[in-house]
Length: 608
Image (cartoon, rainbow, N blue to C red; front, top):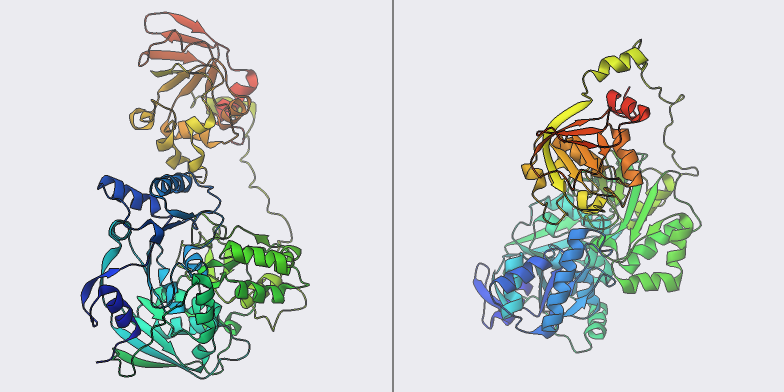
């Protein structure tokens, strides 16, 4: 009986004849871990005393956070680098780009070969007729250590595209049409082979676009029989002869499906569901805040050049943000050489380092609450690319939306861009109740804020405790004060458990220059989150002191850390500056100034 493409590839790497449903161990030609998941792969290997079977076939690719701007990503990347140095592995570091694209362009695999990665879109390799699969960190660790992993041969569906789309449609529009046809699970657990006149003439970039969204249809992989142009590309990339795999004429398929794409027009996916696809014209004029062009789906040179042709000589609409991320550094360099980069910059775009798109939290392309984004990515699940709404479209449509300031197609860009509505009058703050803010009212409210507090002392005999020790910058995106307390001092050696042990009413006592460093307000707010009654220090960092006073946090300057015992009960009088001990002893500090006391009593600088 004849074999499908996936059955032939897996059979060749299992060393025996296989059919759908068979579970076999297969040799993996390229084993890849990203900065996302790579550190866990390393941990699995070291914890189990495992090494690397074949360093020449084993790689790290850093693409989720090519800036290394997140503390956890930076730490994970460095763990992977150290492991790579130990075993002599190649690292495609933060300057390289998306790992799956690097694998194709650098010839890590060719047609008919196998790759596994911690990337759920490793099945992009189907674009060259290779088997690529995203797997968890234990699977990848096994592949690193042994060069093999187990796999169940999936059934194959043959998909034939009938007809040709309109001249305005792109491979992304065809992809979205397929998403609409199959839905989120129409190809669940299957491999699919794609055929038809449109597929035959499709270039590599277009094949990558379609292959990359197989995951969003539930497919294991979408496989393209390679045409001569793709084979020639792979010969150059790998530097060797390649052996393409094609389905046998009598191959047995689970299903045979025809999808009509004749005359297809530009399509767009509505927020939340990649398969919720409609023609762009149905959403014409919907106002947008931002546009993203890039990702593993549409970050290749052909995609970025096509969008640039739409943008050339035009400007991004007022108030709209256009973000662009090439898939690889090679593409970035080509954009620079060919003038494509200049078109984007002249139009007003931000062009980022090569790497993943906004669906990876470490890359540009995220959006904020209420923000409406048109993206060329492959996923628009709620929260995946931020807290706003994300529409999925082609690079050409995305570029047109950036210029128009609203959803449109490249052939229907209006002469004037849509602008954000501005109210006829700026909103006015609510009127204060009568008497609010008078001296009598302030004194009345002050009765709810004691000018003397008594509590347990936490004595930290250390000078120069900076804002990163108090509240580390990896938590900068936290804006809810209620969440901040649990991170207090978790970067101060010896005091990492402070937040778990602190109680409301406690008093923190420390040395000189407390709160030096950055201007971050969270280093003040975290103590209020815990209910700390007061901070006592010999001196405070200048910005920190202002932040604390303005927040209504009681801070007192006094040389108390050297004298007090950790855990003893003390009373702090803000009006006199006196700290009283249980044994009757006193430590004199600087009393609150009139201005500090007034701000404290009313609950903060901005409190009414």
